[in-house]
Length: 228
Image (cartoon, rainbow, N blue to C red; front, side, top):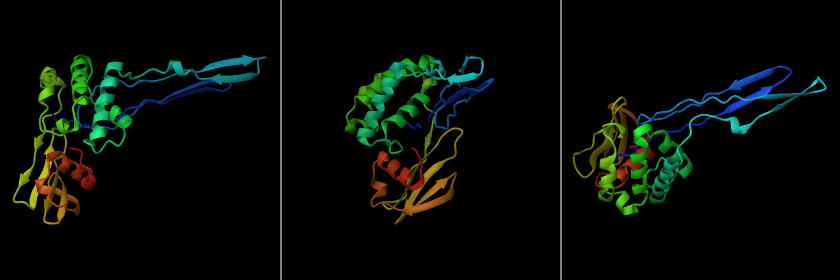
């Protein structure tokens, strides 16, 4: 399973009134990512006007009136468990704290029938050791992975890794509706490629071609900003 999530959602709302009542609502923005989450824009409106002696206006905001996307508590808890494991094992380098990881996790989890099996899988992965997490497969979570409907899985991404010797290799992926991203290292230089076009370079890590996939992914993020 490739957990690539990479996702963030928030809701801001302002409301106020003067002599007349003005209500302003702001729709949330969601800037990410790698899977196709389901989301519903929420709009918060609320303003009350109190008048004393006919010439004094006062405006109050009721935070309890806020509506919008609500993460099911079981999904929130499962994402927290998953993200705590990611951070503890330093497995997803793009996440530097549990809070940002949780937002991405919840945003990239499809709703409906996908929530329950996703929660089960996240809880299982959150219980793995770091050694188990970084392995190519998670046999102890195979039942939870098999129970996840195909429609709830991640896009079918193709690995672009190649090797031409101990000091010449590449690592990357191409996913549906996204450009191919690849880091190609030769000698003491790594090149960041997007759809085959060089976008920048950095110094090659010693022994890059012999590293584990997750270690190459860490370097690809640090060097190119790619999130594999």
